[in-house]
Structures are given as C-alpha cells and as structure tokens.
Length: 233
Ligand SMILES: [Mg+2]
Image (tube, rainbow, N blue to C red):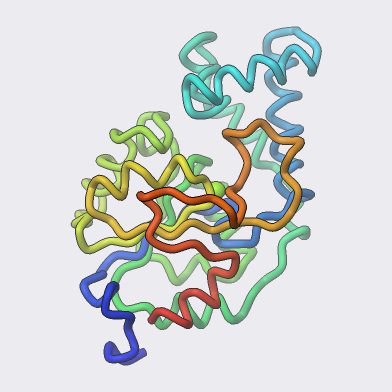
C-alpha cells in the first residue's frame, strides 16, 4: 500500500509487532478455554492437588509472576518444555481464517513479528492454521526470553535485541492491557485489541480487555485488527 495512505501518526513505523493469542484472531472463549483447562489439569497433576486448589494457585502465580508457567518454574522448579507442549496441544478448528487480515498484514510496510507469551511452536501452529505465518519476519516465544514473560521489561528488551528493532519506530498489538505499558514507555505505539465476549469467568489478569478500558499508555483501541490495519495504513 502506498505510503501516502498511512496515518501520519504511523508514518515512522518500520516494525509491526503482534501478540498471538486473542490478537491475531478475535478473542474466542471456547478456543482459549481449552488452554485454560489444560493448564489447570497440568498444574493439578504436577502438584498432586485437585483442580480447584490448582486454579487458586494459578491466580496467585498470574498476579505475582505474570503467567502460570513462570510461577510454576519459580516456585516448583517445573521444566517448562513438557508444560508448554501439553497446554498448547489444542483444537485449532475453533479459529476462523480471515483473508482480510492476511491482505492487511501483507500490505504493511516494514518488518512484521509475532511476540507471544506462549511457545514458539504454538505461534507457528496457530499462525500457520490462520494462513498468516509466512508473512512474518520472525516469531518470538517465551523460551526466547528465558521464560520471563511480557510484561516484564526484560522480555521486551530480549525481543528488540534479537530482531534489532528500534522501539521508537515500532507498533505493538496486544489484547492484554498490562502488556502495553512497558512498550509504550520504550517509545512504541500501542494498539489494544478488545473483546466483546463475556470473560468474567477468567481471573482478571487473564481476560482480554473490553472496549471500556482506558489507559494513557494505549494509543488505539480496536475490536477488529484487519479493519484497523486497513483504516490506518
Ligand atoms: Mg494475547
């Protein structure tokens, strides 16, 4: 797409960074719930506790360590590989392939990346299923950050260093509000993807944001990634 259609606020952007889950596809309770249930089962089995006790522990770890995985590694010394393989083994057929999103990402000027708190294999599997994977110049998973997840600043620094991205020329798309504050302070433009579905059954830290969210580190809010990209580039 010619540069003269680019929103002036984005004319300087040369790196487009996308979270994966609930960002490159619209947040879908049924799909995401598969991962949630599998994490819960894994934790329960690993610690030989019931699923309710595991859920309580997970909420604590989510708040204190960023993810269930980080908490399990920090507190219980769990090996991340088996956990990631288990929780990401999900049915992808809940997801819809969106040709408009493929066209919109294809048209973006500059480099494109996936940056997920899930595994690299998960990023590859999901993005391949969505017919998007070949459009990206790189994908970055939680194993690439030494298992320190977003929103930890170290995770963003690891990403930027690996791909030699200048944060003041980057834009970051993410459904989890708390993952946008650090990239904003680093100089990135930020886009929050919101969901209209009911996520009230999920712990607050794990919910995609809803459209009423307001934060000064969010530059844009959208519930339609393809539509947003078409309108701004
Ligand atoms: Mg996400």
